[in-house]
Length: 319
Ligand code: GLV
Ligand code: MG
Image (cartoon, rainbow, N blue to C red; front, side):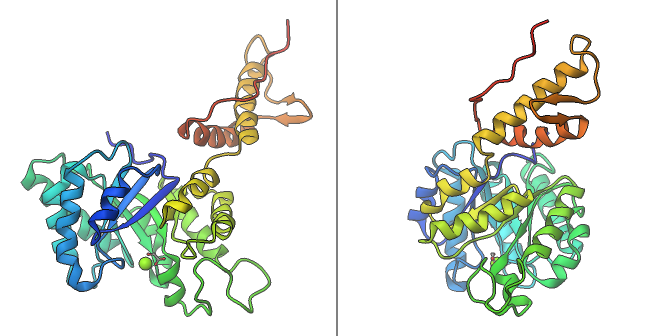
């Protein structure tokens, strides 16, 4: 069984037209790479980029990074060739196809069917290659629930802020930042929450898209921190300078990780025979119960996935 919920705190965008960047991506400390055939590749560079990507996937060591390829969207003339060339050429060394500008569940079905035929032809395991769906326009957002459940291959729902801002005529050119003149809240809140609800309802991951001011690491942290606080699983990085901040923002803080593990230990103890079979109990000044355990599991799960270790450990009272 494929683990479709592997950690994806940082997802590095790599233009398929640049062999040097493809090589460099193999050493970046990111959870995922995606090799791009879409907007980072000029139309005339796309055929060459397909070949570069196949070669890069088949050569060298990607470690345990998730390897995805972003193909062009179904409204172009490139999608089928992107998928056939890349999956036939390197399907065994590829985890996911990322489909941009998804508008309807049928577009996911089309990719699913094409992948199944290629897997059968090539003798690959049918259904192993996942799909990542980018939501980048209004129609995609209003169909996001159906898109999230369109195929068991779907692993992530990704917000594409640049295309989305263009598609809804948002009055800003700075991706991820608030549009000037809107000073009463977060202009992205509804979109992020809509995507997050669809992802959580169908057990998918929710990923935030790029922050284009690549030298402004503080700005990156601010925008990444918002998505992480809501519950998003990760974000794109466009440059090595964003990676450390990204991994940090999408891992729990040490004190929250310790607190979560302590809640789990304390709750296990207090609900046990030795701890008095209690449904709720006090951990310091805080009352904990079954709902606290569920919240703690989320934070502890993210910390364990990020290989964090405990700096503070609760111990059960002496008998
Ligand atoms: C990413 O594809 C975006 O449009 O922001
Ligand atoms: Mg886009």
